[in-house]
Amino acid sequence: MLPVAADPVVHEAARLRRELRLTRRARRAAVHIPGTEVTEALRTAEARLETQLADVLEDPAHARAIARALDARAGALRVAVAARRAEDARAEAGVAAAALTAAAAARGGSITTAERDRVAELLAESHGNGPADDWEAEIVSSQVRDEVLEALTTLRLRDAAAQLRTGVLLTAQMREIIAEALPATRRGDPVLLLGETGGAKTALAESLAHRATGTAPEFISGYGDITGAQVIGAHELRSEAGATVSAFVDGPLLRAMTDGRALILDEINAMPAEFLKRLNRILQLRPGDRYAVQENAGRVVTIAPGFAILATANEQTPHRYRGLDRLSAELINRFGANAYRVHYPDTGNDYTDFPAENVLLATASVVDRHGELPTGLTHAELARVCRAAFISQQVFAGTHGTGFDSYVSTERDIDGRPGLEESVLAPRTLVAILQKVAGSGGGVTLDQALRRFVAGIMHQEDRRVLTLVIQGQGFDL
Image (cartoon, rainbow, N blue to C red; front, top):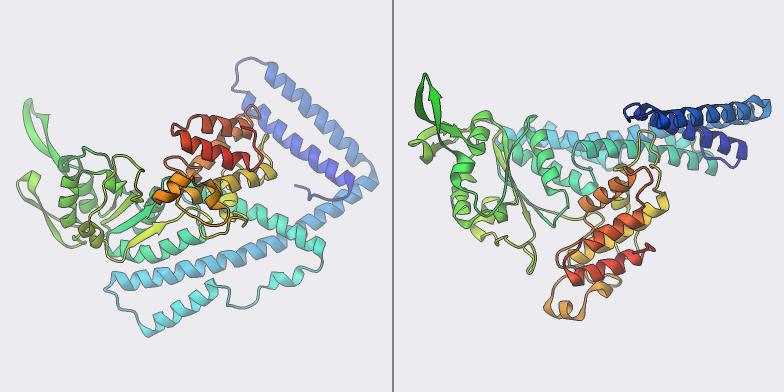
């Protein structure tokens, strides 16, 4: 990849190389499309681009200019890689500090003086209080700085995209929750993740489970008529040696207990009160404890190391999340100090602040391995839609104040209700909309996708507010 430069020759060569790369990728994909018209058209386009690029490179002066640009790019990449390694080292220091603490917690909570000193050193490194980074001395001009920042942005996007493929973007908030909740999960203490819809609570729970045990968790999705038998297990009729016999089949809870795996209870406040009462007792169990299975004639199960319960719950906001019950104080107390509120990205920012976390999430969800956006999406559009998402998330979460309060109707303000009742451009929704545009090959514009999203909102007042928010960022609805 050539750097973006003021030299028009370098700029044209970069454009041709990108078009050639995209055309070759499209031709390889077109092999699976019936008919030959598309493949032939792409082959013709590829040959034309190769000729145009060869013409540019044929001039010795052009070749020298491009060589200088490539040298500058290589230098910027080298500095950017060093900077990224320094960032990774800081992040790894934080993870190492959490691992030391978790190890101490796993053996009973005691920590030696040497370990305490090492944790302090690692935490200082994670906050950038270690030795100065050598790469900073290589920033000798504003041009070098800009090239390094561009390359560093590409590396960060690649890392963010890789994180998303594993389920969760490791923002500062997510790292902080993981660092604090991981020791508890490894001990077998229950963890509760509270937050608004689409804020990655479930993905965070899955990440915690994998980090704690290295194995896939058992999973139960909450709904109103779930029974203890579906969670714990039940007798089933089976055919053995020509006879029909009744055998007890373990449910996800017992499988997690016996295999030493985490159990995720997703949307726990959608589960019936009768089941939650029984869950009160289960939440007190830890690895090494014994559990009598009432459904299986009192069979006793010894809970294996690695078992822990991770629960998610939507915020208990009035007039929202139909079918969800308020969790009892008794149940909440079972989680002790291990209840964490998962906020939307950029929470705490002012109305006029740049929504950096939303932008990172959105961009990482659609860029290719070169860090480039797909056809039909621009960085300017991403910034605008992320700002609309940020505003909607804060209004939905009940943030009032300069800018946000203009989207709250008088009636809702009097009732103390959020400006959006049921609908929001949550992170999950934002990613889905952008991936729809990216996957359309230019056939669906971002304006069209947002228009479709708004049209599907059933709540009339929410539809009006979201129209104001999205139109306010220059989109045509």
